Structures are given as C-alpha cells and as structure tokens.
Amino acid sequence: MKNRNMTTMFSNGNSRRHFLKLAGYSALGLMTTGFGPLLNSLEARQNPETIPETEFIPDLDISLIAQPDEVAVFPGKPTQIWRYHAIIHKGDKNRVIEIPGSYLGPIIKARQGEKIRIRFTNSIPEESIVHWHGLHVPAIMDGHPRHVIAQGQSYLYEFEIRNRAGTYWYHPHPHGRTGPQVYRGLAGLFIISDEEEQAAGLPDSEYDVPLVIQDRSFSSNNQLVYMSGHRMEQMTGFLGDVIMTNGLPDFTLSVSSTAYRLRILNGSNSRIYKLAWEDGRPLIIIGTDGGLLERPVYRRYAFLSPGERLEVWADFSDRPVGFKTAMISLPFGGGGSGNIPMGRGMMGATMGQSQSLPDGAGFSVFKIRVTKLVKKNQALPRMLSEIKPVPQDEAVNFFNPRQFYLTMRHMQWSINGRIFQMEDVAGDEIVQLGSKEIWEFNNTGGGMMQPMNLPHPIHLHGKQFRIIERSGVMHEGYVDEGWKDTALLMPGERIRILVDFANYPGLFLYHCHNLEHEDMGMMRNYYVKG
Ligand SMILES: [Cu+2]
Image (cartoon, rainbow, N blue to C red; front, top):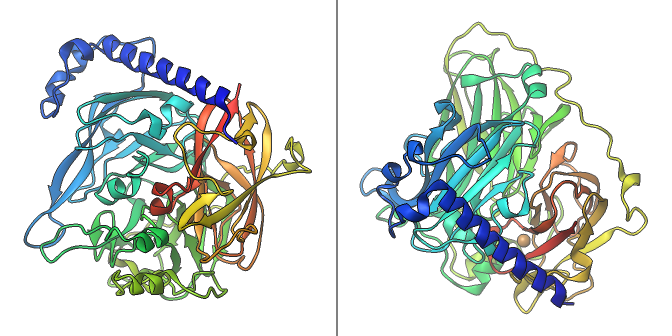
C-alpha cells in the first residue's frame, strides 16, 4: 500500500523544513552564536535584545527547555526526572506558571487569536520534539516525530492560537520514546481562553484549578521505575502503583467553601480512570478536550483515558470547614461494564508487573478538604458555550465512512493491520484539504485474530472532532457531547467521528494514546492534500 510519490513529496517537505529551521535560527542570530551540547547558559545566549524579530510578531515569546533535573517527591533522596523549563522573552509573566515542587512543565496560558513563539531546546540525552496536544496548528508546528532534534538542538515553533478556550497540553513525541519521556516528567498544560468562555461566568483565578493525574512507580531509593522491557508489559501498557496529582503523591486540594472549576488531564501513560466523587454525588461536567460543553452534563462516573481532559464544576458552598471528600477511580472490568476474558492487571501479574494497582482497580485519585469559609455564591451557568449540531450530512463520505480497525498481529498493536512508519501514508489515509469526513474506529477485532482485547484511546493530531455515534458494550461514563481530540474505545466498541480537515495541509498523526501502544507503532500518518 506504500505510495512512492508520497514518500518523495515528504522528503521534499523535510528539506523545506530543514531550510525553515535554519532560516529561523539565523534570523534569530542563534546559528552564529552557536549552540553548545548542553545549554546551561541558554538564558544568557537567548537574551531577547540580541534577537531580531522575524516577520512573525509574537504576543508571547518563550524558550522551552527539556532538561534533566531532580525533585523531592518523597523524604530522602530526590527523584531524578526530566522536565520542561520556560523563559519568557516577551509577554505577560503570568502566562507561564511553574508548579512548585513538581516535575511537570509550566502551565502555558494563551488567548485565542494570539501569536505564540516557542523556541524549544532539547537538553535531554536523546532525541525529542514537542507536540501541542489538541492544538490546531500547521503540520510543521505539530511536533511530528520526523521533526525530532538531538540533544543541544533547537526547534522554532510559531503559530497562531485558533482553538476554542480549553485545557490543552504539551508533551514529547519522538517515535518509540514518547512513553519513557513523558514518564520521566516531560508534560505540561496549555490553557487557552477566549471571549465566549470569559462571558460564561465560571470560577476563575484561584477557583480555576488544573489537576494533572498520572501514575508512577518508585524504587526504594525514590527513583522512577518504568518498564521491565518485557514484551507483554509493552502490550498492556505501563501501570504505576502511585497515583500522582500535579506531580505529587497523596495530593490534597485545599478549597474554600465556594464553587470551583477543576480541569482534569489524564497525563498517565496507559491508565484509564473511572472518575467519581467518593460520596456518590454526580459529576457535573462542564468541559472536555476541546473546551466548554454547551451546557453542564451529569454523570455518576466518567471515564478519562490517557490524553483526555474533563472539566468539572465542584461546589463546596454548602460544606463546612473541615469537610473532606475525594475524587476516586471506581473499579471496572477491562471492557467497561462488560467482561473481557483477561484484564490488563492480571496479564501484568503473570509477567511480573506490580500487582498492587492493576488496571480497573478502585483507588483514591486526589482528596479535597474545605479549609476556608468564604461568602461567594456562584451559580452553575445553564449555558456554557455554543456547540452547533454535528453537520454529518456535510461529510464527503457520508455514505461510506473511512474504516479503521484497531488490530493486533504477532504481538504488535496496529491500525488496519499497519504499524507506524515515519513517512508512510497509505492510499486510504489521504484526505482532501477543506473536506469534512466521517471516520469510523472499530475496537471489535476487525476480523483479524484478536488474542487479547484492550481499551484504546484514539487521538488525532491537529484537529478537534465531534463524536457522531458510539455503539458497542458501554455507553455510560463517556462525555461525547463537545469537541474532542481523543476518544476512548473499550473492547467491543465502535465510534464514528466527524473531522473537518480545514486550514492546514500536510502530514499529521492519528494513534492510540496508550503511550506504550503508540511507541510500538499503533500510530499512522494521515495526509491532508492541498
Ligand atoms: Cu492502544
């Protein structure tokens, strides 16, 4: 199914990219200054006053450096991590917020319509590149693995914020190494605001709280433990036994007696959470991947798979000081409410993986304690944003949706039986710029031999899409109402999504966001033909 012409075209694209990269550097005066292998003196070298502006005039201009560091997670020996660190050259200092005591990268804040320049420098001892998860940006700004840079090199990102207000994030995307790099700490939130959101009347400033949930495992001397390297562990995905929130174990959020907007990102490599309040009251969900829903929805619980976001309205105004509650993850079988013959945890156990917290186990994610009484009544808005009905009849393939089967052969996760190759695009992975299409994903075995059946969160790069329908074993616990960039398919499920391939031609990715699945090649290119 390889298309030779396409491959040639991408090589040209690559040369153009190199040119752009170099042109960008020399325009910034960085080539002549020279990069050393380790950029400890980067701040001095990137003095903005010595850097002439290109024709792109950014509202926010930052350097983002991925570098080795250490952080005190537990008493005793500090934990060796990798983290993103930012330096602001231009723009409001409050746009880049470091999280104290955390391995997580700074929260980057931007407004719709703004122009952003990010000078990424890789100072970790392996290739990397940054992907802006959920952002609608040109192909060369998306962080495709073919754009990886070696230690000591830099990559220039310049793009305009075209997304709706919402909770997006950034993380590395080098092929085969995304899992270990995210695991070591490389991830951060990218929060976008817009006028519609500001008019919605939601809690802001200290009442707007980002919560990144992840699982990790630690050795007895406080160091991160990743994978054993066993193939079966790769097949299931990494599962840690310590639940971290914002980079901290045993996280407790101290709140005042008023309403909060909680922005929850699942930044885990492969763990799926079935989120619920400990006391059984429903989750009031106001937003998902691509920003606010039209109106709040209520769920007894909600699944949150790797890469997905949920925004929850949490009102503590009727709670006394001292009140405690917790966000928990309810137990579930690997097939949602259905049954699959072998759960991931069980399989991990037979392969020597830690069994203290298998997938689908129940546990506390983070705790909440009311510590301050405030008189600040804030009502839940009835309407949050405008979400138009899904115009599925505008799809060019309305009668013949594109089919993608999530498959496994020879101990290898794949999509339609194909694994990732850097610049490979099959004939049925080419779409027309400006067209809308229906894509159907099937986690149903697809007629291929399916010795095990696992959940897969499917992510499209560069696009927010709408979920048209979901069929299969499980319907409760999904929030499919708004704009999405990642959608969980439990075993036996099938979804149809509508994607608008507007604005940006070029090569983008679609893949499973279980990072171990992605790293082994459960990822493909799609090509938007201009
Ligand atoms: Cu997967």
